[in-house]
Image (tube, rainbow, N blue to C red; front, side, top):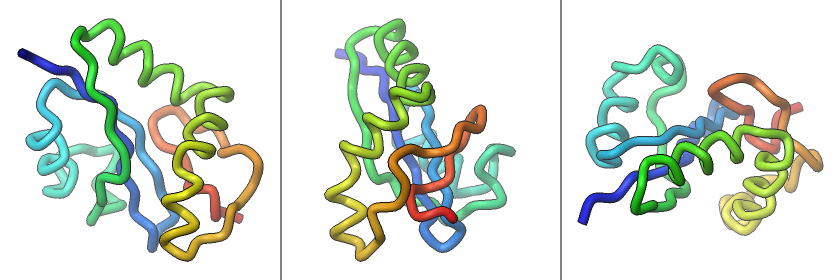
Length: 109
């Protein structure tokens, strides 16, 4: 069965989080870390901190767009709160600022 993935990448040293979607998560993750994507090239190395699998492309794209929305960023922050606490990060702000394809992590000042 084919899956479509929504994923969250992070570079903690540069305080950067990226949300994306792909049909091949392993290949896309490798592509990001090789510097082949202009949006994430300045932020390598990246770590995969979250992903979700969907059975159809429309659901995956809808979820990606939602996570990039204002409400979605709040949802994402809530979902990843445990991760950030486990990695000794501060809770950060109540929301994450809104760029187009990338968002700073919740510890950004």
